[in-house]
Image 1 (spheres, rainbow, N blue to C red):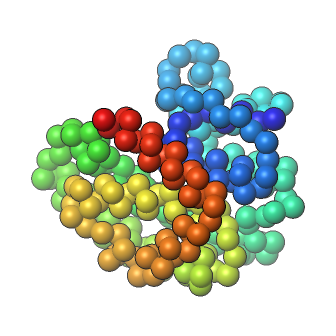
Image 2: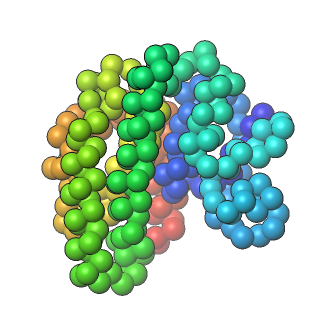
Length: 213
């Protein structure tokens, strides 16, 4: 049985949790915050979450974990078989992380936890968000899934990026990602027909409510 380290508020944790559920793999959740304790650094060298412990040892970094799960459990694949299409899924995943997730994350503390946000920071993030969404619109397909006709890891990453980033951008910038990414609203409705996503969201929302108070 796998052990998944992290906690339900983390969007990266939820990407991996969704993969484990969708693949029907047995796993135990070990509720863990990012930590610099030596015992956890032995599992995740930067102290980040998620971390997946398999029988051979621990694996960190979300993309690496997803690739591992694909290699050991290919009976329900979440990458296309074709090499080019597989690369396009990975391209979309990387663009989502670099140009949307990491951009919105700069305002996470202010939007959710009341940390100070300068107008200069907001303006900078707003500009980066415009460029990032323009780039994503060149890659997104929404036909009906993010990368095309099949449900892939690009959907996992995009879903748990936009659902958190949209809260941040709306609160900090009064900007909705649904206005910047045409087709996003219908795609979100499709994703939220997935029973595993609904279950994860319930746990995430309860944990976030307890965290914020």
